[in-house]
Image (cartoon, rainbow, N blue to C red; front, top):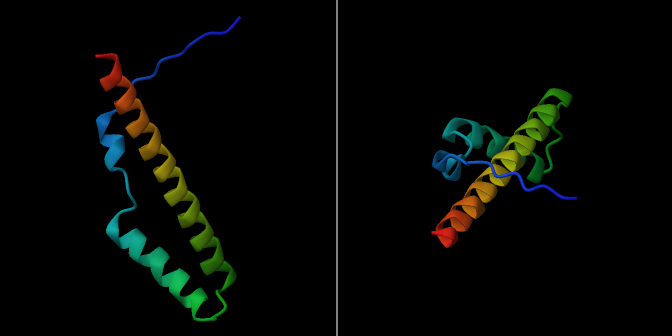
Length: 75
């Protein structure tokens, strides 16, 4: 037996992105690393956390976009 659960995804999720300042910080940390500079443990932890946040927001955005397409197809 299977069940279908439908969730409403707010349209605002499609616009979720890292705020500009946070994105700039992540890019700065990644640029340091790309130039061969070793990140401190705190910087590495910060970069890893920001990458996870960016990935999570991307996943939410993709799911919102997919949900929006599904809603349009049902109309």
